[in-house]
Amino acid sequence: MQPFEVSVPEVSGEGIERLITIQIPMEWDAEIGEWLMTEEGSRLVEETKCRAMGLLTPGEMKTLRERLGFSQKQMGELFQVGAKSWTRWETGRYRPMRVIGLLIRALHDGAVSLDYLLERAGMKEALSPWMKAIPASTPVVGYFNFSSPPARSVQPQSESRSPIRWSKMRPSRPAMRSFPRRSLLPQTKEATEA
Amino acid sequence: MRWLEQVCRIIATGDLRLIQRTKDFSKEFQKGFPNDSEGEVEDAFLDFLESENPVGCPVTMDYPTGDTWEFFFLFKGRKTYGKIMLREGGRKVLLFSAHPPEKKRLRCEL
Picture 1 (cartoon, rainbow over the protein chains, first blue to last red):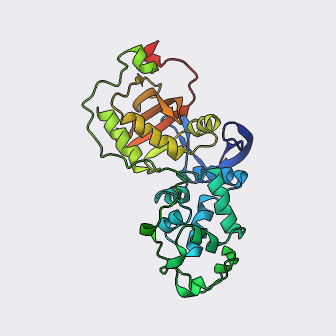
Picture 2: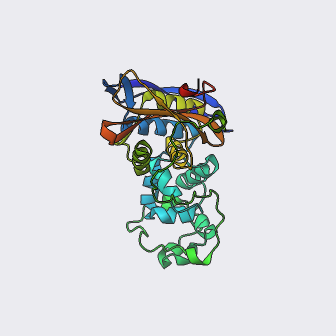
C-alpha cells in the first residue's frame, strides 16, 4: 500500500478544493524504478473523488441500474445522454458532469422519482402496465422492493422523440490508419509550438 | 511509424492490463486537471497521435526498457505535455505524463 493524494476539484472544475490522502495498492516496477498504479488503486482513487464531489461511484451507478433492471443503453436514454455515456461512467472511464451526477444521485436517493424521469425521457409509454400503476411520487428506492424487476419490459421509444442532448458524444473513432507520414520529429519550431 | 501504430492500437483497447500508468502520471494529471478523468486524456492522446502530423521527441531514459517519446498535445483546449513509453516488445504502453507543460520546449528542440 502506498499513500496517494486525491485532488478534489472546486465546484467550478478549475482549481483544487482539497487533497485527500488515501492508501492504495501499487506495484513496484523494478525495471524502471517507479511505482505503477493498479486497477484497484485507480478504482479507489476514483471512488474517493466521486464521494468527495457528492457523486455516485461507478459501482453505485451500476448497482442503481441493476436494481432498476435497465440496460446501460436505457440508462443513457433515461438521462438523455449519448448511448455510450452511461457505459463510460459505470466503468469509471469517464465521470459525469457534476450537474448530471447530481441528478443521478437524486434518483438514487429518491429525491426525484423514476416516473418523472421516464416521462421526461419519453419512455413512460413503453412501460409494462404494473409499472405504470406505480404512483408518480414514488421514489426509485421503492421499486427496489419488487420481487420481479421490470428488466425486460421497459422499451424506450427512442425513435419517436428528440431528446435534449446534455453531453455531445464524440464521433466514433475512424478505423486505424497506417502512418506513412512524416517523422514524429518536429519539422519546424513553429509546427511544434503550434 | 511503428511506434505510433502500436501505441494507438494499445490505447484504443482501453485495457488497463496493457495501459500502465506511473504514480506520478496520475498524481500530476490530477493536479493539472482535477475535474477530468484519465480515460478522457487517453482519448486525447489518441486524437493527437492519430492526427495528420503529430510531432514529438524521442527520450533517452536511464532505463532503456522501451521506446519513449514526449510531445505537446491539446487536452480540453490546453497545451499539455505528454510522455509515453512503448515497452515489453510493443505489447504494453506506460503513461508517464499528461500535465500542463513545465518547460516551453521539448528536449530535441533545445
